[in-house]
Length: 472
Ligand code: ATP
Ligand code: MG
Image 1: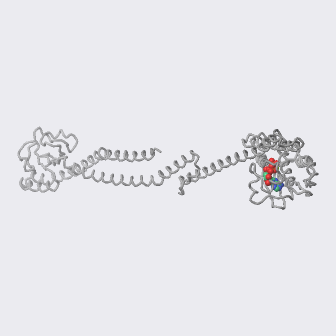
Image 2: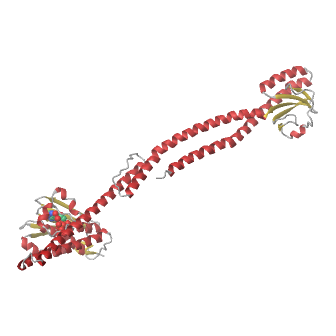
Image 3: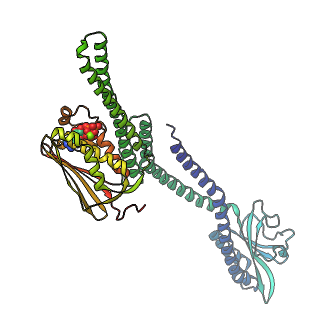
């Protein structure tokens, strides 16, 4: 199996890391520098204003000597980590706190108007510095007249250190986030990816027909629910397969035994093993077996119609009491032989139901046929109809051999015959009740059985009542 989902997740994780790194290296770096610059400039402006209105003014008013001011400004410049200049109106440098630049020099092309409306400049300050520097100035005003300018210079490279420190914190934070994301990835693999892999593997086993594999996930979430549903589906599929296998085995068996005996008797007749005068007896057995095969084929064809859920129903309104009487009459001959009598307890004169008449006749026929087959001679079969709400309950009850408890559920299966019945009824195919159940469920009705071994059996099914004749 390709681990594409896992690879996609891993790729997503790495791409996230790279994008986050690039964002810090470009966007965050740029924004941080801007922020630091702005902050520094406003701080420098506050200082320059203060210095211009205190020390610088004192100099112009003559209350402090140039040396005094210079030494004062030097200590301030150390504190600010910046260079402080006092420039005359024409650009002549009166004080410079930097020992290298000589006071008394001139700032070439000095023109305060080039600052425009801004109080600072980023550059080389009229080509005085070799590196990019931020210069902030404040005019020194005495009696409303500008006498000079106090300028504070700070190289941009100094701010870069600041920014780098800031960025290092950001990179460290990113590394911690990246680590947390890795833990999340592990957690995701454990809770989502691994279970999905298990489910996929099981699905592949099922597709190869191996339904024994069970998905061992019991979490109480969507994945646990999915695993449970797939396990259920696999169990259903495996029983379906088992049912089909059983069905084919039963069909083959039921066809093979009569065919083997027919073949055996015909061969014996042909090669003279069976003498001429005995042939009639064996031809009768052959006829019996052929009839059984015919019945088997008919039954299977009938069931097949219902299995495909395509059986057309011819629903009409008819009197169920009358139908019961007619079906019972058709059994008169068989009953006489076994001295079995019928007791009919029917509700009222008529009881109209809406159903497929010929199919309900077949249901009654199969149930009564069973009741007669599995009854003892000289017994009675009771057929009763009861109306309850919108339903009529039809019961066929005998006092015959009964059905063992553990066979009760199986009698509805195709080809199933209880051990008790095998000796009594060789002709039976075991399809009769399967057909009955299909017909009743095609009507959306129910059928139940109550039986006790050696006491008797009762089948009860329902049909919908209609109050008048032919309402459809
Ligand atoms: P067929 O209906 O094709 O002649 P069958 O009667 O054996 O064959 P079903 O009608 O499907 O098949 O019945 C299945 C089995 O249920 C019977 O073989 C029998 O063992 C048991 N059974 C059904 N009805 C009764 C009954 N009234 N009393 C006792 N056992 C019954
Ligand atoms: Mg039957």
